[in-house]
Each structure stands twice: as C-alpha cells, then as structure tokens.
Length: 129
Image (cartoon, rainbow, N blue to C red; front, side, top):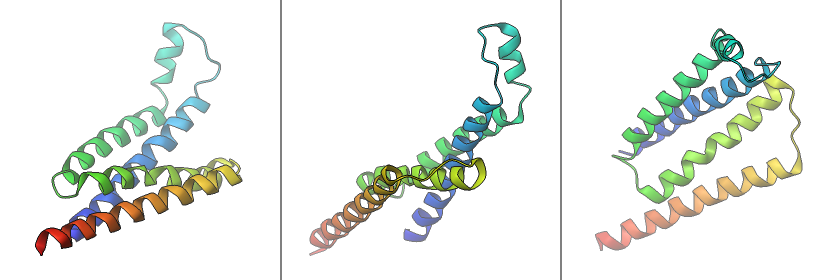
C-alpha cells in the first residue's frame, strides 16, 4: 500500500507541477490582455492552455485515487508539495527568483508533511496494540 501511495504522490506532483507551469506560461503568452472574444479565442490557440487543463484533470484523477489508499491528514498535506516543485521549476525554466519566503514556506510544508505522517504512523501503531 505504501508503494501505491508514494507513486501516487509522485504522479500527483508531476500533474500539479505541469498544470501550474503551463498555467503560468499561458498567462505570460496571453498578452496583451483585453476583454474580448478575439482575445479569448487567441488564448485557446496556445498549447500551454491545454497543458494546464491536462495537468488539472490528471491531478484530480490521481488525487481521487490516492484518497482510496492514504490517510486524509498526511495526504492533504503532501498534496501541497507541488508548491515546492513549482517554485523550483519556475526558477529553473522561467527565470523567477528564489527568495527567503519561498525557502521558509517550502521548509514548513515539508516539516508539516513529515509531522502528519509521523503522527499517523503513531496512531496506526496504537490501534494495532
């Protein structure tokens, strides 16, 4: 079961990261912004929009599958790990800056996932006894 959950979270992070990066790229390529049907139709000529849609659909299906196998607390916390991967890939691919706020936020997310997973393991051990 643990292998299914770990693989599931890696797939979820991949879909979430892809969706977020494509969403960022779609917004960058949507310029100039104007409230018109022509702009809206032009937006859907960009491949990044379809990557974002695919990423969100894939993440949703993966998330629903993970919830069948993982405890809710750690699963919910781990689902936010994509914020870290999006930050890293945005620095690498989009030239965004990494600042102290992103580093502290990413560290807190990882610590939160770790604490919830440890707490869930402890509860599971107590229920077996």
